Image (tube, rainbow, N blue to C red):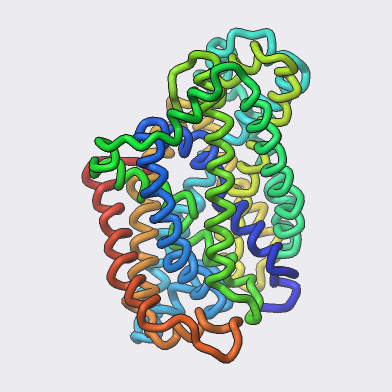
Length: 440
């Protein structure tokens, strides 16, 4: 991999990784999980799992990407070839890779909803409609966001046009704006009458929830998939990382900024719902029905609607960008004679054509559940097993310690934490998803 295929700076790497992780799980998933799982009780477990998963799981995905010098397919091949099973590694790697492509199909649809909402907020249309009817007008019917859908895919593909360099440049713009906007919104929400009750609700320690296994499982699942540890997405970020960068430090920073993104989203959503007497909800209803209704009643609501949907659009595109790049890099690794533009065009068509028939939420929802329940958790588990049970311990530790100087900081403790704690937890989440049909 050439120098041009690497991130130019540590912060470019971190912002790109954060861009991959920040998405709908932060914006509409985290606030609802907090409010429905005992507030502060959920947050305690969430922070514990974020620390564990970023320290071990995310670091391992970055490490295998940098060690192999390539993304998903190449990383699994590299891991398994040490056991004389390179072809098996390629087969195993196809599952998380397919997961990235399949989830991108649905993600492009929901991002097209966001782009429509942004345009309607900008023109003022969103401020005068019945939000339930407005959402139904395009989400409950087919082929109503076709132009927005195509625009989202084209914009995302353009950010991937030169690989690591263009992706890094895009995230250096989108991610700072995302954080600034959400902090701005959180400050505005703090001035609303009744917002204080939302903060109390968000940070309360519910003893019953603290003892409830469901709280622990929900916090664990939210932390795991919020960091985008899917056995695919973060590998390519590691592949574009220079050898002189500290992987574990980068993983910690990714975890910190991902948590900040989720927290400021919750500090916007939960107090706002309290201030306007709305039920605590999550998912598309929160973003496209409840929040626009609140913004209609808020002084200066149109401005806040524009900045809100702009921020969420950036979060959506940055996540979609990673999904496309994962697939693109793996195809180029397997077929190096193909041009990047040709591969990106293929990916765009592979995402757009089936996505056309999922633009109605009645089809989009089941598709996303199918991928997030069956494919993504299994891919993540296969990744965890591959790095800690298949790849030789010495290779993983050597890569983890590369970039931090001559002293070997990470050894048996880090490795055993990954092998005997992280991997079983990934397997547990996968089992819960498959058996109980739970989408984290």
